[in-house]
Length: 207
Image 1 (spheres, rainbow, N blue to C red):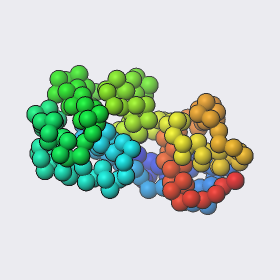
Image 2: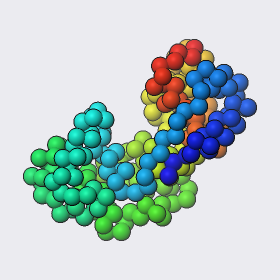
Image 3: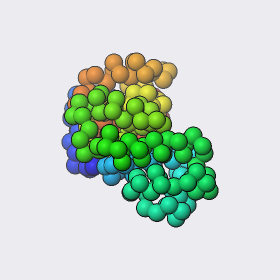
Image 4: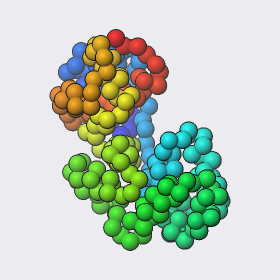
């Protein structure tokens, strides 16, 4: 499970104590709510289905697919589904391929969500070798579903924008700059990312 409200608060308080600009931003927008997802196959399947579509559209596809093939907690139901059923639910050919690839990884035992590598980079690598799962998807899964507190999705646009605002940059920092800037925030970078998304959602201008 993801970082709890208490864990987020502790981590953000630690960040605020070491970074005055972060303390000021926290004072303006407050603590973010937890972002918690279930560990396992269904959460990663939701990530695939949700790529490049709205939350509402993704939920519609999920509901249709579950109605056609059965519970999506069971990867075998995707494995057994026909191409026609996946198309009828609204999956593109590419997303259907990704969904089948994920299901195959799980049913074959090659991917065991209960035993991902302890090292964060190794865990990211284990997930991105699945067709359709990029680094961002892997990082978000590890942060929201496993509560890995030092995950740092530096390639995320909103994180770049908000970290730049928090630190008073005139332009959006690059991914490399974001990675370098956040080294001082270890081991709380995951909480920093959740805070950045929180601030981005509020739309606060911290410049």
